[in-house]
Image 1 (cartoon, rainbow, N blue to C red):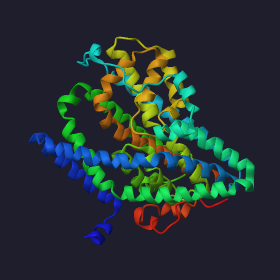
Image 2 (cartoon, helix red, strand yellow; image 1 turned 30 degrees about the vertical axis):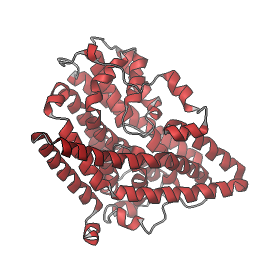
Image 3 (cartoon, one colour; image 1 turned 45 degrees about the vertical axis):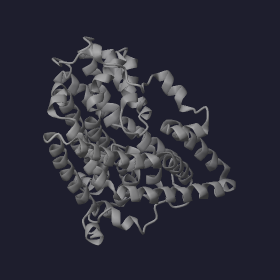
Image 4 (cartoon, rainbow, N blue to C red; image 1 turned 180 degrees about the vertical axis):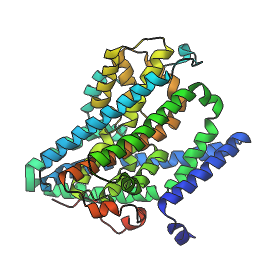
Length: 430
């Protein structure tokens, strides 16, 4: 039975889990089977909880090793700058699409929701909170609380210090490489459970969010999905074809397992090992991929930090009767490009949304209007995030002439999961 299941491609397993989850979700809702809904919720929740468990050590060790590995990469500084520039360019395009769709669809007009009944979410963001929250008061506390932004800060500082110290820091770097390999191995075991996690997550979403709940926000939900689809299937392919001179279909063949897992798990960081493996399969050098992907998984959020907050800000402004001007739209673009690290790769984009709302002076309670359908929106947002995290290093490597074109053209012809068990998961030591 197990060997037969292993012969089924991983992407097909996830698809089967998705289909079965939808069927069970509809059954639970139609027959009012509370026990089935609860079971689906528990299964999906445990899967996400297992992913989150690996996040702190994964982020810290991956970034430390990635920064140190830049020592062995030619023109590392130029690669890092180009990666950041492309992060900014794609974020700007994504937020422009979000604003454009918001102006075109007016997602908040005619919405029958009582703004007075909404309350601000418990987790909010502001520029002061964002800036002061980067530096932890207690490094241990950052790991205990799972504050990814603070962990990223610590990892960048420690990695840069280890890089400058040189040979004396090699034992510490070797320890991080070993720990990274162990965490990734354990996380691959969790990822193997993705089809079951998919069943629970999708099933619970279908059982919990019926049309009655989605109907008042149908226009907004559609706009978010259309915006993400435009970035995923129009913007990224055009950039790959024009900037990278690459066949977009080959990219999706290689990156699809990561995009698919991101959709169901709603976690960019949890998907990071699959994203990095996909990027390497696409021909991006491992040394560069081991820097760009972990960095992107914590800062590159075209779905959560660009399209969604732009549309949501317009939605909230319209619900509360606030007229936005050109300056406000420029502020939305600025927040999306500069403040995307506030999302820090975890499920949900509430911090980024409240950061945008507070910058515009809009009521933070407006975010509460969207909390009910956030899991539905977060699936397509995270898929867009992860696709962008794979697109940028692929384009940069292609433009630098370091992309293995033969590997790119053959991407997707082998199942992603099986060979990983015997291949090295950590970056090649510098």
